[in-house]
Image (tube, rainbow, N blue to C red; front, side, top):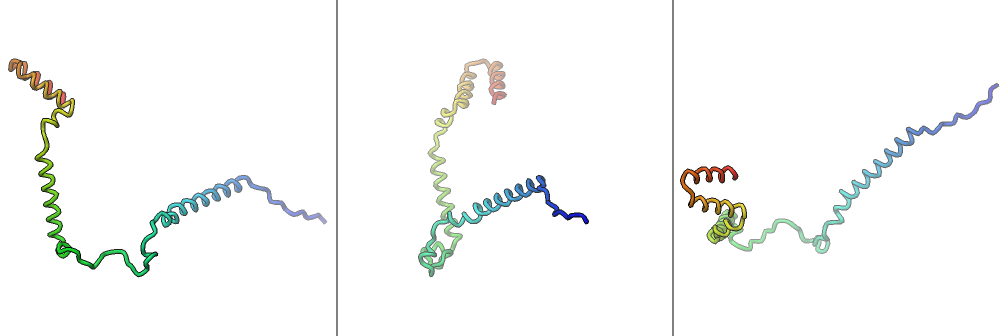
Length: 134
């Protein structure tokens, strides 16, 4: 009778390598889940609900001003105030300051001023050169 030997399983390098890659992906996935999901709760500030459990955060039922009763009138006054502010700012704009602030605009202004001294036929060609450069 033949002697039976226990069969030894050989270590398959391919299976070991794939197992290690799977384990690394699993660990990376768990770390990403922890950082994106679980750490969000740690970054939140301590809210007042924990200090006062009877308070509820959200919409208030108190009315502080009559404009809250009619939101459209509050919106109209807000828009009117913003328009008035814009009108005041627009009226205080000095065009000379804007024109002189940019060197490119200043060059075009100087070129146009120099056209005044040229004859009409040369002025036309010079003006076309200026406009083509824009």
